Length: 447
Image 1: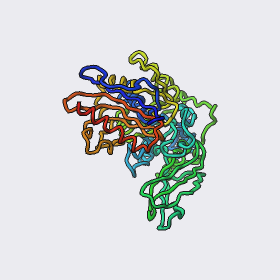
Image 2 (image 1 turned 30 degrees about the vertical axis):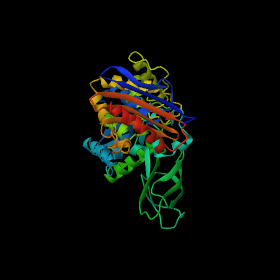
Image 3 (image 1 turned 90 degrees about the vertical axis):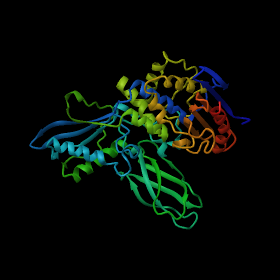
Image 4 (image 1 turned 135 degrees about the horizontal axis):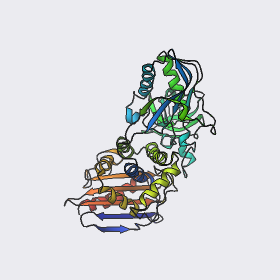
């Protein structure tokens, strides 16, 4: 810790006093505790029942069961489309069959034009400010977008033998991606975990995988980011229509020029598909620390309030929303997930946010979304078998040389402590840093 930065704050809600603090105003890189800002802001601004929507239009006319023209899917930033987290593994394509059923219910048996997917309401920024190139190819570095599908992730299933260093063989992949190239340099090794990294940026139809996985595996799962979610959706919808006996004479995956404008006022609305609610999304966002969901919440805030679902729009709305409620001195937000190292958040910022949330009617949703120490989510191993187990609801944050926690502790005397702790640039392993923080949390639980 000699060269590390460390901040801490603990606030007693019952006495309304700070009971311990150290560098609490120091702006640090908090990693995933940033998600507390995106999830609580979504509840504040969008509301717990808000559901992102994908709207299906047509351009042309319908005559004798034939859509003479194009089918247009307007992306609404819904992260639940085909999400294995929200829909369940094996149900990823169910929404496509729901869509084809809706088309059949409209009497459509044939489409003479193209399948057009329009995600431009959310721009094509690729990734928020401060994201590392080394992260973008990995599943946790999936970029926010107007069309999200399958968690914007590719799943690779690999086979390894008993020989150390032998190349892993790709047995299957989901989804099937048109024109995609996977450069596989992954090998089997004497390890018990996934030590792979993937490289490739947004809209780049190539991914390179490196690193090691355990030996003697038949279908070992690793994941990367999906490069073109909008084209992927068009491809899979086209295939589903064909499977369900709806003929499409045109092409799929037609991404219209970025400057082109589709006038939706003159198009016909076929149906609207509603995604999961904010309350459902934030629960998984915090429990499983899903970066994409946090980023989509920020973009949805921007979309609803400005008509453009850009990260910077969402952050601007978030900052303006809070300025009359909480004085967030020194706060620097650049993304919604904490993957950006250009975020600057203090322990005081986090504690003030959590104190405010505790007083709101939606607080039970916040509390339910937070993992429980020693029990669930990303802090299932924190304070295991120790006094803090089961009485701490908190969000964790972990990146290289970053470890943070923020949340609520119920003490042995019935008090509620709001706390935040952030450490940057320590000279030990992340797990070691966690064990150094545990006695501090245990001490708070005994107050």
